[in-house]
Each structure stands twice: as C-alpha cells, then as structure tokens.
Amino acid sequence: MPQDIGHHVTSKAQLSSVQMQLNEASMAQKIEGSIRVSAGTMRNVISLIRIPELAITMQELSRELIKAGIIEELVGENLHANSPTELQEEASEEEVDNVLPEILKDRMATTGRLSTALIAPGSTVAAPLGEEEEEGEEDIDVMMGDMRTKLEALRS
Image (cartoon, rainbow, N blue to C red; front, side):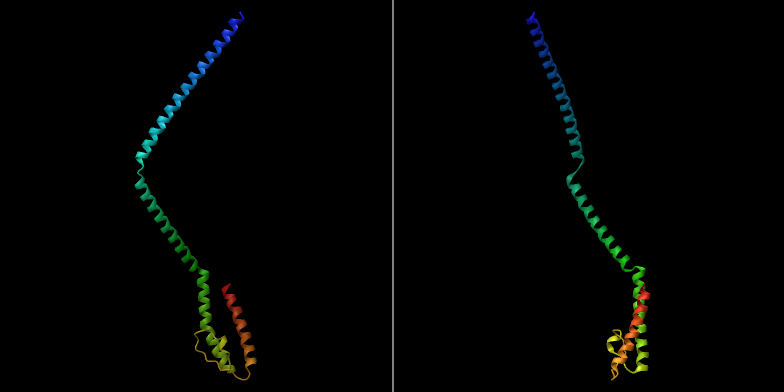
C-alpha cells in the first residue's frame, strides 16, 4: 500500500505539471493573438501616416510659430513703447524743451548773464558771461532746481 500512495502522489504531480503546461500554452496563444492584432493595428496606422507629408507639415507649423512669436514680440514692443505714460513723458519733455529757452531768454534779458551749459540743446539763446558769474550761476541753479522739481511733478 505504501507503493500505491507513492504512485498516486507521483501521478498527481505529473497531472499538475501537465495542467500548468496547458495553461502556459494557452496564455502564450492569447499573447500571440494580442501581438498579431497590435501588429496589424500598427501597420494600419503607419499606412495612414505619410512621413514626408508629416515632415513638411511640421516645418510649416514651425515657420508659422516663429512668425507668430515675432509678431507677438513686435506688437508687445509697440504697445509698451507707445504706452500712455511714455507718450505723456515725451510730451512733457517737449513742452519743457520749448518753454525753457523762453524762460532763459527772459532771465538773460533781466540779468544780462547766463551760463551756456544750462541752455537746452538746440536753443538759439546766446549767453555771454560777465564778471559777476558766480552770483548769476547761483540764481540759475535755483531756477533750474525749481524747473527740475516741476518736471518731476509732471512726470509723476
């Protein structure tokens, strides 16, 4: 009887081995079928995609994106350059440049002396220097300080 038990255990082990081999073969067939379906799908996708046409399309897209970036940059620069604050500052500076020579002309007419370094560039005011140069420069420095203060007030 002990032989029958040993023989029975061996037979049972062999049957389990055969069952596992059948399960393994079945799984291998399922995997093979899935790979065949995937390969067929990949062939279909590849046949739909034309690589040369895709490359041309990508190059065109790249050029359009570059154009859009350049246009966006130009528009941004122009909007920033022509902002109301900057336009207002430019107008204020032009007004100061127009008024300053007139004020300095009036000042020169009353005192008879003025330093040319304090006249706005491009103005036609002549400024002779006299013997009392230091006293006149102090007056002009005060006047220029006032004008700078007014200009800063206009800018802000």
